[in-house]
Image (cartoon, rainbow, N blue to C red; front, side, top):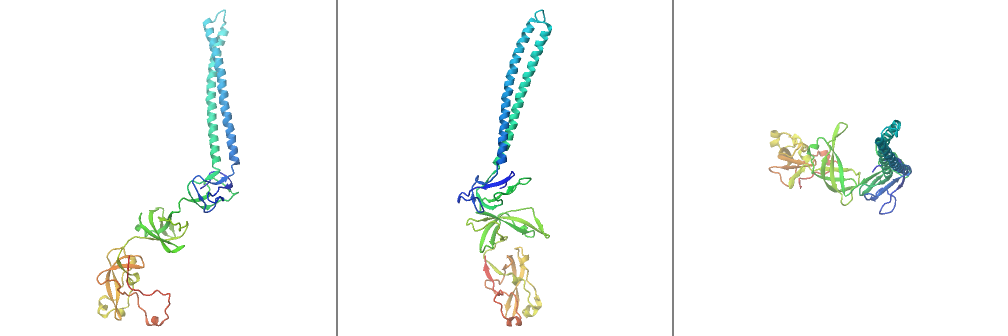
Length: 375
């Protein structure tokens, strides 16, 4: 909410609930007074323009009265001229008087036309004065800052006694949130990932204020005005979030996860199991010459298609390969399928040397875990 005039803030409106001056967090209604700018100069302009309107209207009345006088003189001149025409130039009426009556009649007609024009001009002056009065009244009304919507004051950017200056850009006095029950997240998405974002896409979001809670949302639209920072192009994606419980606050930093693919009742392995490369000595001798130390596929390159990858299964003191089809991945876990793939199958994530076994185990080091089922 801004200001369209220059002036000093004289007083704030009243919070309808507390009766205290409008401040941060105040609930306001549409049309409610937020602040009042000192209106002394603008009220004086209204009074001056009102006086000009009254004077202009008086000039119209005077012009109409003058026209009545001119019309009366015209009627008199017209009567004299008609009688002069009946008599004509003769001994009873000299030629000079005859011409004089005719001239007086013509002059009177011209004066009436001038009187009509004077009335039109006076009425135009009234219209001009009233327009100036309307402008002055509008500027006076701008001294009262009102709320355009029902909402809550997010930011109050002026204090009592502060002078606001409205030049080319209207100064912002208040920031009002219309409805905090429906909020929007502006997520910066890298250009490499923007192709997988679409309107209506499900979104999960977390905020540091509530680290153990997940909020659900949906993509509203993708803004096309990309920005570049240090040669990295990002697009702003608008995500609508339901905030019926009022937990989310404006300006929180959100960690957003877009659902680009969904799989239910599938088998998952840690993504590191598809990347790990065993040493040649660790592979079962029967397949060592055939396969060698083949690496698995990096799941981060998966597009959800039937791409082949390799898992390594423990076989005594060795490991043997298992070819699998790699599906969707969230970066931590990856979907796998194929012959021999089953729930609770143990897969190898790495190997530990003798020195590592004898070393003290750090309780904070992530432990190797088996395959699990996920949704």
